[in-house]
Length: 224
Length: 166
Image 1 (cartoon, each protein chain N blue to C red):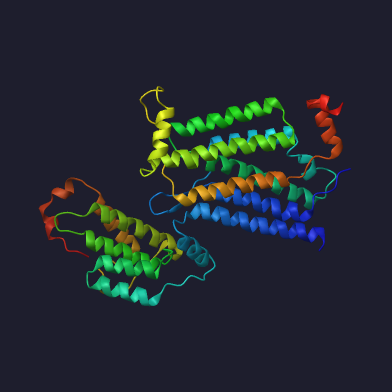
Image 2 (image 1 turned 90 degrees about the vertical axis):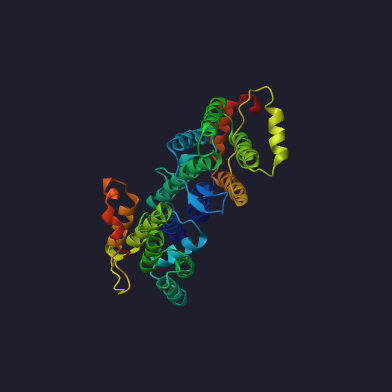
């Protein structure tokens, strides 16, 4: 029998982390004047979030039975449902945060996420590997969206324009459009991604028996 | 502390926080002062700065519209006060009004301010008993601004030149 999830973590820490990510994920800061706006999640991010939650369940990163079930009281189940709902909202808004707002790049980013998640689902990683994989995926998306594309849109950042121009040489005459963002937007997005990853780490781990069963199914050679 | 109490407190706190986030997404504040002012207004704690408001009114009556708007913006930085937004809309109307043409950009900004005034007014009705004005309700002002933005055959009527600024 696994140790129960501390009530403080389940009732306060996890919902507050995921709600903060859900709120900050849609925050947009205009490059001119830094005016705020809040973008609700596009429909595709709901699909991606559903897929991501599915991947988490498959990998044992999210164990719904630790949050909701017959063995828990009504109040505990309600708290567990809140964690699941806020996790879903945070996942959807994290994709909103890391995806450009419009244009061809938005489609490219969404396809990138879709194929990577599908691939991860097929690979059936364990909890630790999935965490590392998500860190790499979100980290790269962050770098492309908030470092490379922002630099392309910045007329003073000529070295990045030249670098991407060299990389794109021979790939056609079409230039990659940048996306202007306020400098503060990158910091907010970084904190949002970091907070989301912390939230994932704090999710209740599967009980040892279930973990052994999971490893026995996915990687039996490790048990030998 | 009992785990049950912790869970109930967590649920209440989460519900309040979620409601705040939904409110922010629905209201779409553009600046931090609009965010804080909107929150204060929602609990009835928002106050307009009377000194800046009076200064804005004085500029407005002297036909110094740019100056009046600057003072009104200082008086109501969160854009939550319907009366101040009404005067801002009126200043756009008067500045944009011309016998032969209406300034479309100013009229459009005036329409936005009039919409804000109506949205913030109780039940959407705002009446301003100011003897120096030609229009005393936000609805009249909004309709006048709307008319100024529309184009049609009536624009060719030469008698329109005789219309007075309200």
